[in-house]
Length: 562
Image (cartoon, rainbow, N blue to C red; front, side, top):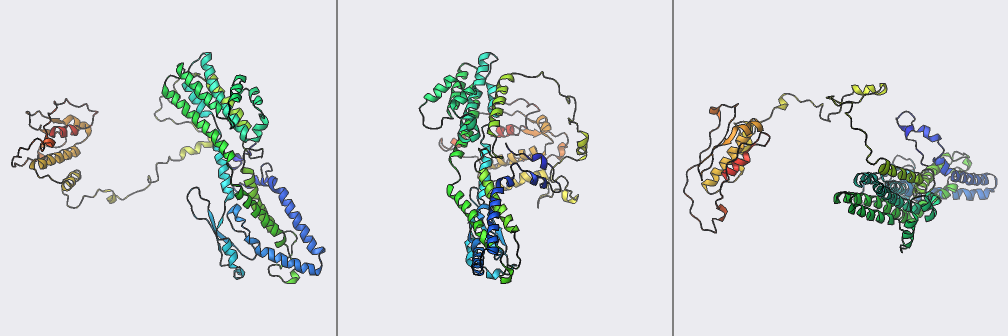
């Protein structure tokens, strides 16, 4: 069963994580105490043999062996586990920087040496080079894999809502359709979970147990076993689901093809998660990676059994001026490194029976019960529609208890720029250089300077009229006033209609006069091929006044000018 401690750390406080250190179930102490006792026992046995069993000559040889193991133990890349370089009495401190890499790449630990260590000059450069590029974060890879496997757990919540909303019928046959569809989905989840989880396999060791549990009928079992396939057949109930959904569509239980499409799409999502669980169980973390990490950790601490022994201070060995019986910091280092390895060992397969493994049997029970309730007892079961409590309230707000009443005094968040203040002179719009007219005319004049003028005079007049229409559009008070005041007067056939924008807020004498089309030479008559772009198009009949909710008729004026 999963160890949940979320409520214990709901609020950050002094020593918040300290209370978690006393928990035993699911703790690192429960995982590591056997290895820690074994390591400490071997260390104390070697220490006792050095002090009380060996002769003086044997002690001198053992002391040389201790110095040798302590000097070269750092060559063993324990950072495969943590991504950090080991700390040695002779090497001083190591600083680790991990560069940012693209998604999917394993980070590389870069090890540099701190210059502030006094005895750094005795360090061999080959030792530093050997740990300059060490791939790490094996545990990070395992934790990401562990969480992704949980995200692939097949949950029927979305599928049961679609079944309840698309498969209709209050009679017994409609109820049978809905319950059978969800039973097929639950059967597919049970078949895949008993293939990857030891706890589920112990609960359903054979297909007969699945039949007796009610996930499969005896007739369905015959069809399941008569299907000739040497591969895992967890997908067979999903095919039955599809066939039954198609039959329900033919009978009219599913009323249109869109509902059938939605139902099958949710089924494919459910089946895809079942397939991902199968692939996670099939494709493991490469064995060589796990082997290298394990060998690196255990060989390193095997060397530490000898290299971290306390020697006789009377011999004058550097770094051995203190004689202790228990290697406190070596034990802490073993606790951290071996503890991380145990974390990876527990999480690499979350479908076992460890304390923090997934509760697959609980999920099977929950999913089966919830899905049947949703499509059977809750189908078409609605409460009477009533007005809510805030029906006539202009500002609906739920009440607060006395423990949360202080939240009413806090202002709502409006945005990160809401509290910015500007000086009054900084909030004035600035005119463009060389523009004397209103700010609204600057846009049209700028377009007139940029747009090229055609060779013909008529093209220039048409451009000027379009710009005039744009200026009148920008100078109108609002869309409503434009729609009610702008009207095009009728004109004889072949002549462009005259349009004006009647603005009740602007005096007619102050309004800008209409530009007149300059007189120019008549255009020559072109042949049929050349005159094709200028083919005359009959003008549409004048339209009636537009409703006030329509946009401004500036487009209609442009059509009349065409």
